[in-house]
Length: 266
Image 1: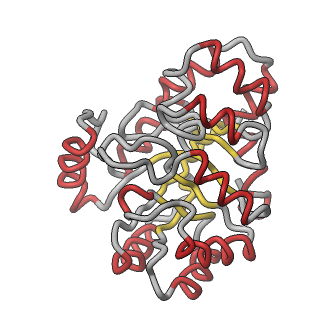
Image 2: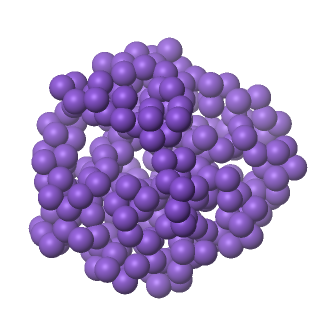
């Protein structure tokens, strides 16, 4: 079985220590290691992970191109690149075409980027992604670094799904970190993928069973959220659950391969 991690973050070596310090303060959480490519590969090897989705986030529009240049430069047969994009970046059409040629999707982090998931300003981004069949990975639910309103709540994601029914959407943190009941109610059974990062182990067993009963096993993706978590920990937990082996295989890699398509040679 090929294990694919659908949620990791790394940074250029020269800024990784600063990024680690800033994010640890923002999240009030200690990272397991310096968030660089070599360390990601080390933890992947320990966990038996073949490939990892590396998500890049541009906090400001002017960062989009330079962050993507770096992401494209580290492309590797073990990295599934999800590029940066910002709803206020005016060169979005040209950049999304470049992303189509060099990456597998984009990541949006509404709390860092200061927009709401269902903001009309973002619709032009979703239109291009839908047109080019590129997925978008949203941070969903509460953001530990923010004390304000949740900008990517399940109801806002549902608004996006209703407006763009063919958009490929991955909702991190089981559809809404610390908002799982609402995510189950509003997004369960919809045409949306959930990743397990920081959530499947925190949910109650009862709620977890309700999730799988309503949403099934075909649109759940294993994600570690490295460097905040160890990839091995989540894999061991998923393997400990009382699911059929074929469903574990779907979650641990098969569903992500299907989502991205064989054209990505995963």
